[in-house]
Length: 124
Ligand SMILES: [Zn+2]
Image (cartoon, rainbow, N blue to C red; front, side, top):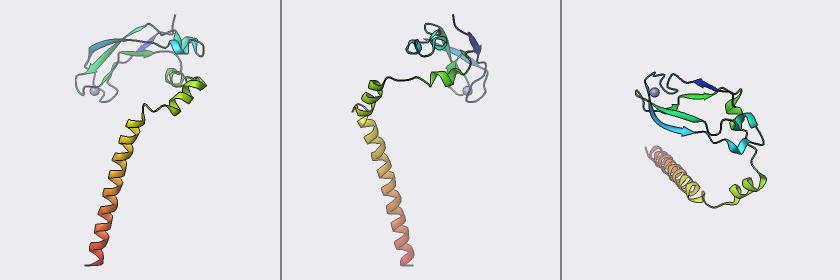
């Protein structure tokens, strides 16, 4: 038994009220069974995901009515070995390399542009 749901009647992005069924999802909060049993009690519940006709954003048709739902769901106490593995794992290295490469290119372009402008001012 869980605390029930509160309907979401408007699009979170544009406020539109034309929300149509897109697909059905299912809550899986079993990882909270030891830490937060009332939160874990939502596991297995089906939730209708709806798409806004105006802007295309998709969102659940209802949210858990459990007090401080989002505070609780973002307060998962990860096991120390999981945190260590996430810190040392290399599977996200390509993502970080791409982000850093794009940032370095952007900074290089900005420095070159500033240098060109500075030279132009010096000779005018
Ligand atoms: Zn919308």
